[in-house]
Image 1 (cartoon, rainbow, N blue to C red):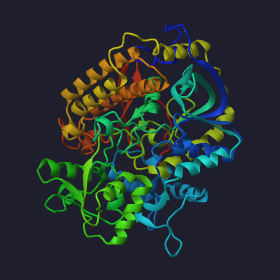
Image 2 (spheres, rainbow, N blue to C red; image 1 turned 90 degrees about the vertical axis):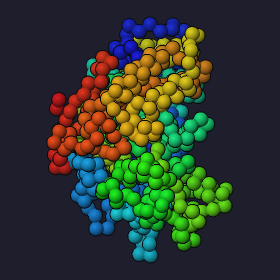
Image 3 (cartoon, helix red, strand yellow; image 1 turned 30 degrees about the vertical axis):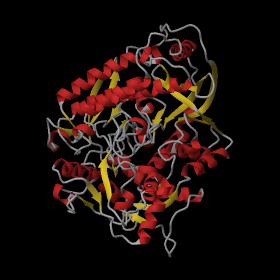
Length: 582
């Protein structure tokens, strides 16, 4: 079933789990099911609701008021067409930063809608900073300042007022329901009651976000969840698609954030906000020594300076004026209060000392890089009736908040235009029972030898040491990847024997299972790209140089019969309308 050695639930009729079912079944029918109530999912639901009368269900394992990677807020919108910029120039910027490998068609389609969705956020009540002329205050060529600590509550409130939207908070979706190769809904369990939700829908939208926690983090033990990306985004959407046989793309284009040391607060707030340069322990600006200042090269140069003994590295803030310091204090309270609190508790501030920086562990996230589902121009996946938006959708790096919202809007309008041609298909009773038996058996396991936490930490140690984590300077080679692949398989075999004592344990088991599937695909993608295209993000020690002649292409994959099968695809240009044809 969901664990190692089991087929996808669509073929589960022969599964023999425990017969003592401990869950009640609640079957719901809707027009559109949105899995994940983050910013992309909420905006997609809002778009459908405002433009149609179709019934919508949003399923979120937390609460949409404070869920997803914007749960704590954000202080800028980093994808915006500012003054003297155009959608075309935005595409060229993303193309340059991504070393040429990205879906120009997808980036261009979302670039054309960035300013529109920003305006919509303002209309919903989100405060935007403006100058004396009433214009948005720009932080950079494609970034505008906001007071965004309440971005999620504002979106949640807008949805609460829609009569055709039902929000299921605290419901973890475990897998898709599939019949004859078509996605017909999803199944999951409540985190508050012993209820299994079987949701049947004409169209399904995956908006679950990317994957964190697959590598050993910067801060171990009790602080291990103090990380750049939301620790609750565990790659569930990726994993559900992988198990169902959806085509995935660019997992090898990992994202590693350059962040303030220990607090893992964003550095862009300082770098763009006050134009602070990166310096080493000698006070030297160093990024230019390593080439063009792209996102990954700013990280790579920092790693190299530390390896050369020139660290630690800093953002040069010492000597800034009190007004600038006050702005930084407020900006971090909007989205990373730990940084402001650290300054306060130490009775200091950025005006008095430079801010030390470091790289985080790698993440798989389609909002910053290109990892995720392989989608067409409407954000439809290769599985019929399934869409992917936001961080879970691949191909379009640097989409950030507004880009994820545009993708939600694009998918929403496609659904509105095609849903009348889609029939509701009932789920198979045997399949549902098999799921419930599988959920239940974790509460009856007695001969378990490892805790959930131990398996999770083992996975993170494997990925860190053998698949390019912090301890190896993000480098890997073929031999190490093969060791990682074998050991991840060993961990997958342990999952079915795990013990759950409560619903939270059951959730943790599925989160670890999903991460392991992401690891499996990631390792295969890293092994396949025989070059180093993105320093640190994809640092192949066997092939340390970029190879435009052979690798200006997408590394895609499809999971079949327990094997990750690679599919290499040619680049898609800005003016091409891509459709799934093979």
